[in-house]
Image 1 (tube, rainbow, N blue to C red):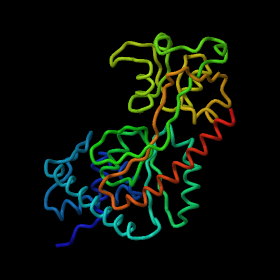
Image 2: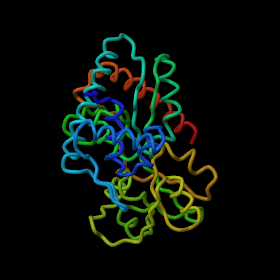
Image 3: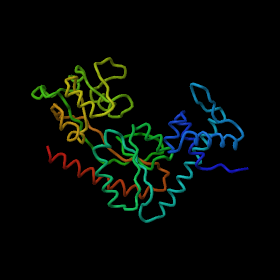
Image 4: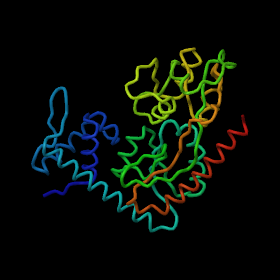
Length: 305
């Protein structure tokens, strides 16, 4: 019997995740016909169909559902074996996969990557930018080594290390510059612009305003802080953004930025990784370097005000 290959398992995992041959082929950087051929060969080797194909939808068969979980366990074990080999080295080299949430990535990543490349010349850094639930899923599945997110994540098996606390600021149209700073009760009466569902920053803003789940409110949602600020500039409402985003997102917008009175809305930024990773010691070093870089960037921001 021809043995299964790791590459086939990666293709199987990608197709199961996307449910689409074209998207899976793109994610695996191969052609769609080549992916289809590999999946057919895998089904032949396993002796049973793993996907149910129809005109409208591709879904796993009952056998495929069980098989993909086994495949993912195998792929995770292979990743952990590679991590174990890297952990035996005094210096961290090779691939490092870091996830970052969108409300942090554009503002801190350039400086963090420069610092890590300087400290670890042999490091091949791969960045994944997406929302927290996806990052945690990929972290647990072994697709990421670590992630920079807002804490706490309160996930079993995940180590959380705080990096820095950061305030949120209020962004209003220029015409509102001299108006009183609204408290949470006043904010609930305004048209509050927020990131769409799934972003932890949205939940943090709603928590500050004491919005209860299901509360009816006047709101427009966006998929980036840049869009939120431009919506405010157009007079569509007000929004909250993290301090680190102010220099980039407000420089060309007709808005005014105001700090809240105490108690200020804040978030804790931290780095997370699996408790079981063999790279824990190296990730501690990465974490310390990242903390120093973020602290320096935030000091520069404060001095530039």
